[in-house]
Image 1 (tube, rainbow, N blue to C red):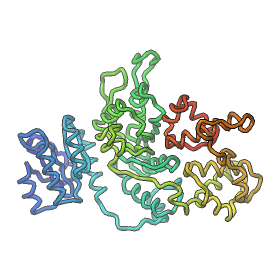
Image 2: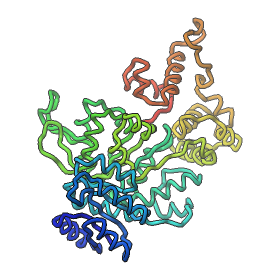
Image 3: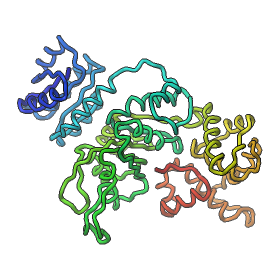
Image 4: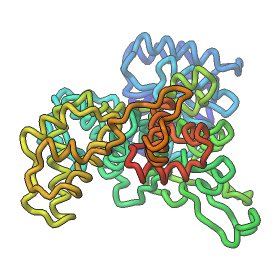
Length: 457
């Protein structure tokens, strides 16, 4: 049963007809008294709550009722319906336990999907995760590992993927956030549609609208033809917004609108377009901390993190390192035509104890480099140690000092400075580029050149 709480007769009728047509049993309440009259006899599966259901348009009545409902029914999903003017109030509602908030005027398909998503996520799964069982149910071919934390993540992905719930993937650089995003798409009802990847950290604020929403001919000097943006390309499919924590405030507002209303306007056009897209975001930054400092919009944060998946660092799942190494080597056998290639037990043990701040991406780099440079078919610890970049073991430069002439090449000095800057700025490419006085793309070229791991889409 779906409980709709609203004092507007027209909205009651509209929502009741919509959801009855979709097969729902519907109950209607005008306010708190009618709500608890119904709750005394029935327990709804989900609740639609308007933030203003009385002559007082502040929304405070709706927020108070939400808190009373959460006390009585802590696991029943509540979806708020609100106008743009009360978005801040809707955010307060999310903090108070609401599952989602929909803005007026709503889109019927989006509202129905939001309710179905809330119902799907409210179902409790008792089965303990098992890798073989998960692989039988879902498509996780490119995700390697059997660590319990990873299996819990895969179980969550399996439950979330069939819905349209927005997912926020967090974790250190190199932990495989893009692979998780792809797995969500491949196990969704949108899997036959486009999966569009966007590295927000590599898009300047001046190009943001054109890249994401497209432009029409003549919108700016070089706009010779119409161009579809990333959201339009992802229509009916999924869009992966990587490095979302790097968005500047003005771009955050523009992104919030399309996530909120499912509409956008190409640059240079006054005609709105509607988009149906599943949004998956990723970041290696602490968005909650950024919200508290005013660096990231709170309403955008709540819009993108209905489901949050935190990926563990490789040091938190060392038992998966041999599995990852074997997976990489099996692929490299074919790529480099070395069918007898394998890694010794001693080498596997040595790799498990290797410091890998770049996580899976760095491990893959180490394995591939060793395969390329070692002539042996059975790789030993010495093969890996010998073929590690020599700069890895170099001592950091002392502050305000330079090495003696001839003691270090200019290239080695450049490598060490980039390494120190990446460590100091926690692998945030934009900040590192500014600190070194070079462009982001110049930094990317150097990171690739030296094999330094970094987060990219």
